[in-house]
Amino acid sequence: MSTRVTAHINLDALKHNFQRVKDYAPNAKVMAAIKGNAYGHGMLEVATGLPEVDMLAVERPAQAYQLRDHGIEQPIIVLGGFDDELELQEMAAQGIMSVVHTTAQVSLLENTDLIQPIAIWAKLNTGMNRLGFSEQAFSVAYQRLTKLNNIQQPFGLMTHFARADEIDNPATANQVKCFDQMADKELPQSLSNSAAIISRPETHRDYVRPGIMLYGISPFSDQVAEAFDLKPVMTLSSRLIDINVCKKGDAVGYGGTWVCPEDMPVGVVAVGYGDGYPRHAKNGTPVLVNDTICPLVGRVSMDLITVDLRPTPMAKIGDPVVLWGEGLPVETVALHSETIAYELVTKVTERVRRTT
Ligand SMILES: *Cc1c(COP(=O)(O)O)cnc(C)c1O
Image (cartoon, rainbow, N blue to C red; front, side, top):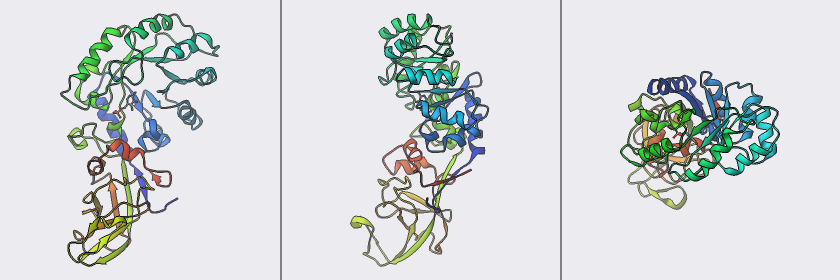
């Protein structure tokens, strides 16, 4: 494990962002998305840091059991649902809730002996065309589900938006319309991801499902998290471990993709794609050395990056470096790396030490 690269997880910021969700959706309960190891922030740390959340959403049953084994008591829902009888029985026995998105899962619910009824949310496909029942499939599934003793009645209904991050795109309103046509109004409903929590109050309904905003990251590519008073939870940091005094014309790193325009100091920072720093980060991606923005120069390698130290010429070996987080939004790094902030935080690797 690297002792140099650290992901500091600020639980006060997490609680603050949770409060922001409550401010936006005061009448809704909160189902917090902590899949992908809580978007790389540490599932257990985040679950422990959010004792007031109404429900935790994970990707597979294994994560739900892990949370229970560590004493997490909030209700837990498995977004991917169950694959077979054994999985269904175990989830029911452990009191884990499930998303149900296929007719095959409805059949399993009808044909499996359960120790106690399982709580489920049926997922409707309203336009994303990923998981969920189509309108026709659901009209049949709905009749079957309402008759089931194996599930807790009433069950919930959910859908997921494909384009809620595009504020003016009519696709989201169309999805809502489709949902309202399919949904029995008496059943609990859940529609909103972070983008819709912020921008579409009419979608809040019974449960909202924030992910990215809990981590202090903006769900919109053209607006920063600060604009919504969200605070970054993860700060990824390392140290300067060497400094090269380069001459004009020297090429830096693999492929020599960056050539020094003048005599200049080039700093070497102990972080690379082996830690989850994006290999596609371009020359010019901001890196904070001693709180000063220094542009990335040369290619990102597995364990190291190189930075232009001209903005902080007095920098010395051992000085602190922030890759993203407090003082440098991860969204900015994502823009320079042709990806989204979701991917950057989720891909922070195992060897990076998480501290709270
Ligand atoms: C990940 C996820 C969310 C959270 O989305 P954000 O954009 O991170 O807020 C909500 N619902 C479902 C079904 C998800 O998979």
